Every structure is written in structure tokens, then in C-alpha cells.
Image 1: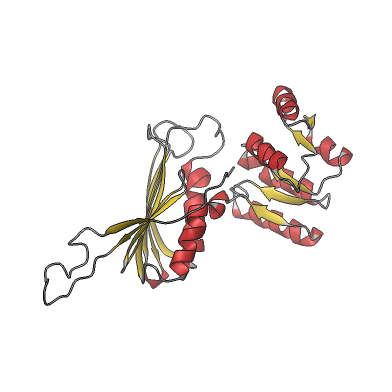
Image 2 (image 1 turned 60 degrees about the horizontal axis):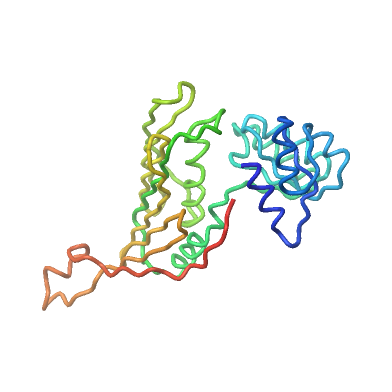
Length: 273
């Protein structure tokens, strides 16, 4: 993940990748050579020696609080990979430190910048679906060997909970969840959750490390039809509920009796971390 951040910074016209740091000297040298920048094995030394405006904190979640606050205390703005911390106290400590030092703080909820999500947000604001009543999420794939200190709840489900809260502007009032531990003996590798939001919107999450195929999809159901997001291909598809005259076609007047028209929405794709 850290290499992805370095790659994106190196491609930005209005940014200069000053340095990278990794406790593994081999990785630090490899990434610094690849992106023609300086490499360190001690991030504190990097902070002391370099003139830096922004730092991406891409370390194990258990170290987010320590590293982020060290960066903030240098008066440097920070982008922290999600989750911001492993507990609420750690998250609040980072936020409070950023406020005290008056620096910018952002959490890496990259899916908010997915073009399909941006277009979905616009469609919902324009009442494309009418009243929303259900959202279904599938974020499944093979077990990631890079994850060493968290399971699917902190690693994956945060993306979708954040996106849902962002899309509908509400927070859940009830949550019921079931989990599994099949491959990982310390953390959950599968989550199935049912959430009830204000305005009676129900949400179902299927999050898992146990699938041989990687799937990243979100479905939003409303009175006018359904919108489907494919996070990977950055596609948004609208399925409209057909309308019929109830007198001439009484059986077809019921929503869902006939298959709705499929419309591929125009979404400009772009590279994300």
C-alpha cells in the first residue's frame, strides 16, 4: 500500500515526492530507486532532515496513532490510511493533535473518490431512485497476506460503512452481525451484517477474505429502480422500474414483475490507490 502512495505522489504535477521511509531497508531502497527519491529506515530521521508539507502514514494500524502524532507534532499535515486508529481513544488523540497544531488531517477513505461513487452520489441527490429503502454491499476476495494486525471489520467494512453514511447522510440506529474465523486465528475473516438506518433504510453487508474471486459491488434500491456500482471497473448501471398503465396492464403495474431497462451511466474512469 505504501508503494501505491509513493507512485501516486510521483505522478502528481503539483507535488514532489521528497522521501520515503520503511523499517525494511531493502524495501526503502527499492521504492526510493523506483521513484527517484530519498529512502530512510527511520521516519523520525526523515522528518528531521527533510522539508515536508504532507506525509502519508501507511503503517500497520496499531502504529497509526504513534506515527501520525509524531508527524503532526512537526507541524506537518497528514493523510492516515484507514482505519485512523485501532480504537476510539487513539482516533480522538490524532484528531485533537491535528486541531492543536492547526494542520490538515485526512483519512484514506479512497472509495469516496471512485468516479462511480461520485456519479452515484449525484444521481441520488437528483432523486434518480426516489425514496431509497435498501442497500446491499459485496466486498469479498482472497485472503491478503499483507494484512497482519486486523481483520475484515477494520480493514474492509470501514470502506462501505463510510460510503453508505456519505451517500445517504444518515447513521445506523441498529446493527446485527455474524462473523467467522476460518483462516485467521486472531481476527475475523468474514462479516455478514444487517443494519437499519433512520428513514427505515436497511443495509446488508457481505464482507469476506474467503472468496477465490475479488468482487467489489454496491446496490442501491429505490422506488424508481436500482443503481449498481462496480468499484473495480468504476461502472455505474441504472436499472429502471418499468411503468405501465394499471388499467390496460394490471399485472405489469406491480414493480419488479417485469425486468427494468438497463442503462450504463457515463462515468469517467481514473486511477485510484
